[in-house]
Length: 178
Image 1: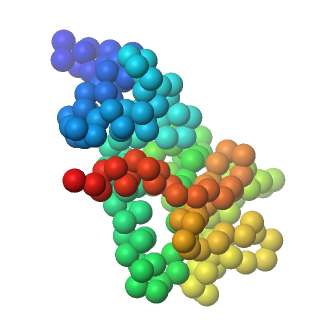
Image 2: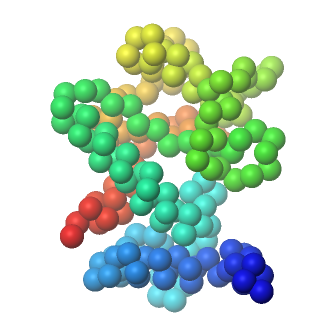
């Protein structure tokens, strides 16, 4: 019965689970957090094709994304250049959604014949360039600016690499306030 209840919650009750997680974690800031996660009244937001459902987004923000934002800010404040990214493609041929460490297959395996930046993002080349030169940029690649004051990041999407700004900044700043 417990397993069945979890399956049911995972399929149809993620809005309620997400709401409960946010209410418990944010307390007096819960209304603002619910809004940032896309809740409107009693309606839960649809699942994001890259970020997943709200419980997944919340946990990822809490233990990965927001602490990484903070560390990147510390590095930048210390005078270091920082290149941030968000990876939005699943492990090839896995049939699973995007998940933590999905980019590793793209880093360590050779791209298949005919691959494009959309079907096989050039993370291997970016990482190799970074290891060799201290910058991920190189000939034939979309320019990847360092984070800078705009908190720029590269988003690897099914449509190809795209630049973004302030990766989950509003929710991360809310998490960081007492």
